[in-house]
Image (cartoon, rainbow, N blue to C red; front, side, top):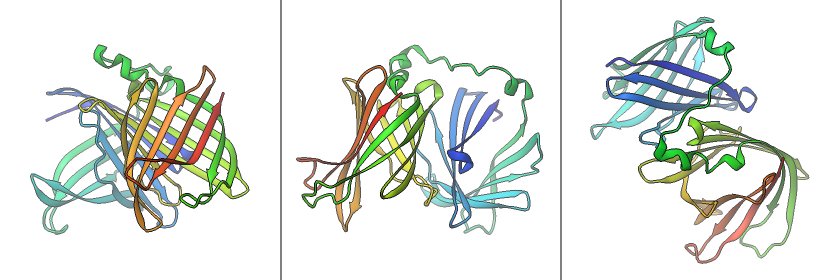
Length: 293
């Protein structure tokens, strides 16, 4: 099966990450995908996390590095119920072209079978043209505008609870910026956060995306120290407020985490993270953000 289309890549997070958006036409119609590349400075490795717009679920991240002009990233996955390895390779890299290959192995990497090959050449005409806003299908138009209030640059004031679940009222302030980029015409977005305070500097990258099958949003975070996305929280917008939920370990016990965001005016918005240790009966806010244009 052959596909023809465009791949647009932009640096984010000061070059420690890159966002790749893919649009292509083929025998099965129009297809969109995105990849988020994150760098781990301690391991000197990159992770690549891919998502197909039709499925809207993150695939297991491929992890690896570039050496001598060639990149090789590997992940463990399944195919038709069997455990396999997946290898992504970038090669024949020049200023205006490169090749990409994806291969599968079911024998621990002794042999590899090519599953996808791509030749990418630079489109200088598209780079010099003004970017066009993607047109949303009619049935997705409302969904694509749910995050309209959040796009752009924000001054951000953060309050962070120092000791959750300890009846503490001690909060530490941080001040900085948040920049939110629109993806897929509004069906996804990427937020870059950086703020500093008495406890130091905190940086976060957040990917948010919509699943057209479940009609839910997912939110995932990465830090520059780790260089890989975590487990996404999932939920939905109701009355202009997004609430997404995740289960994680905190201080040796399993808790629920809720992330929420909503608009409080044309030039202001608010988000918060809250913890629950009793199955969602009660919640304790542990992190709040106030945004202003």
